[in-house]
Length: 236
Ligand code: SF4
Image 1 (cartoon, protein in one colour):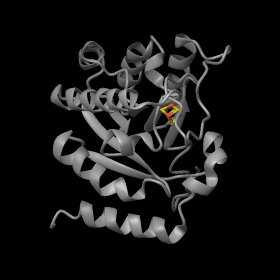
Image 2: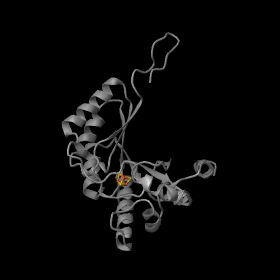
Image 3: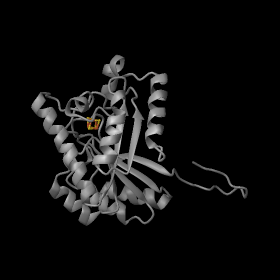
Image 4: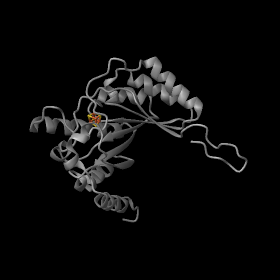
């Protein structure tokens, strides 16, 4: 980005926002995963390399950083990386996670080491079965569905209760669009989320294999977006 001011001076000399995927490893096998995550790659960046890149982004003027994966908390160095990002004054950092590894011990560590980081948990269904439409483990049965849902929800609840900042994101596809309202209510009324972000499904990674089922027609996306605006209306 290079916006020009009246004085012909660029207002920004770097992107304002950067998405940084730090690992390809993931413990889920979601139907829509645009990154086709699963196995950790042999040549993934070291802790020192990641911290160095974050410092360089900060120094170059980036003010909004999203750290993601794969599942970032499969990296044993995540709290160290987040603490480093937090130490970069003026850099607003969010970590996007599937929430499955946010147990009480991990959340207490995060609350001690990086309380100013924002957490964004992906929840695309308001029940174990509706979540499972997109988000699931490789082997799927009812017991695993129930367990996955309760792990994600209890992690989100404890995160909020500990005082950390929680947001929820929802991938809207042709298969789960009618769940948006339920997730919005779950996130804001029960989990203490400060934001709910609806992301339109786009066909990449594993999502390309199920395009017919997952595709969200533009009119449907518009309709869901309007509903989401209505839900967000503070007068309602
Ligand atoms: S969408 Fe996220 S949680 Fe699901 S497989 Fe991909 S990286 Fe993992």
